[in-house]
Image 1: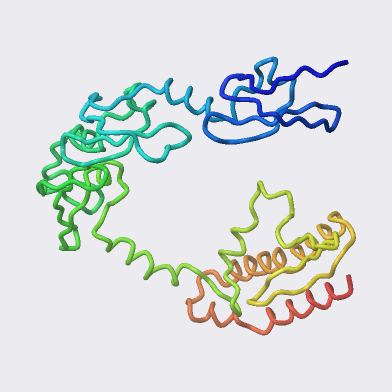
Image 2: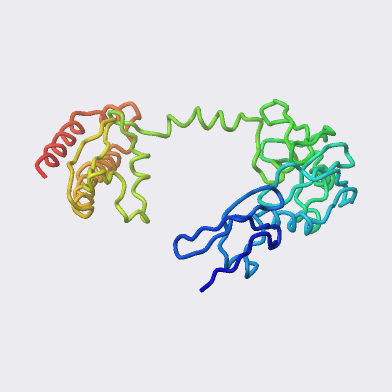
Length: 309
């Protein structure tokens, strides 16, 4: 079939030049776009209008579809100009707030009313509640300082039961996130060592806490290696014991659970039994019993049993 000569013809922004090639079962004409770009374009795409430019035409159409918001006001924001970069895939606009701040907001946020200020409006709308002489934990609110935090919450000057004074945002008081000047946390940290029991570096309370009723996966202490095998270990008394490497997850999990029964669970049961037997004994005596040689014997027996698994 005779080839149709398209040289000199125009298709959209394309002007066909006098250069034709045939490759990959397609005839192609060398075309020059209005913007100066040259490219070979398939003949069917030219004739059908599928290709009308190098891509610049689509950009121009998109720009025309974007309504210029310059000079318009949305809430407290007045649009100054279009931003040089988009935000979250949408066109951004540089806006000036009535408070004097500048910010960049997308046209979608402006037109939908999602953003009406640089953020100052939200701060202004935070309502003041009279907290005078109200008690929040150890804190008594005395008077508002006239300042706000970064969220716009009014800051109150408070006195603590310990005698200290501090400034706390209204939101923190109302939500009970802050109930002291910090003295409560310090006291709790100071009393923490007295509530925990350590035996040769192992904390009984932390170990017992790991025995969660909803933890049935047994994944703790089982690791998949790059070669596809599973390595398992267990920690006890400040040390980690390697329990071997296995070809399947089920095998590694079985060994890990056995180690927990031998080490962790046996330790907890023995500790509970001794605490019941020594109930009423002075604390110093109990601590001596806790550090007795019987714990060492228990661990040695457990490790020996595991090494033979």
